[in-house]
Length: 171
Image (cartoon, rainbow, N blue to C red; front, top):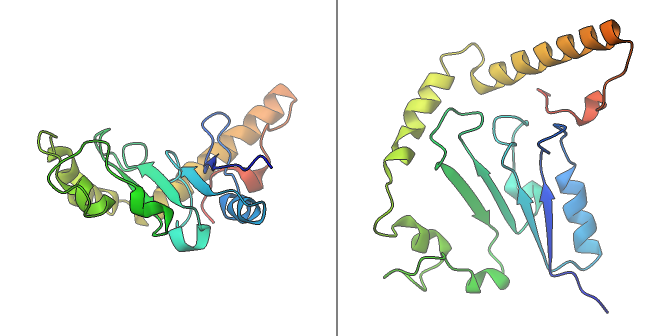
């Protein structure tokens, strides 16, 4: 009778860099009666293929854009699935928008410096200057990592620590 109220799952681990099958784990959590699932996706945006919140099915999904999109560290987002439980979800800083839902409560909290968020359109333009945009960057990075990994395996007479199917890559 010990009910799990919240499961926290990484989408991509930091060390070693491995893509976790979050969609499948969220499904297992649902089958096991876990009340809510939070996906920590700090490394996922720009490192994994298309991210679809509906397909993943988590209650919360949080990521940032400074790791792979060259944005200032404060540029991030959180997705909160609309549910019975999300009605009581509020921004930690109470403002005049309290009670109007998380999105509106989070839109203006007074003394925050919002200028970092203004770079996102310019960042997207910059990223798209590269051949293939973010997809091209991900593919080139992945191909270089695989090539260097294989070179080190051969030079050191060892093996890779992560199977290719679990490494962040261009699919």
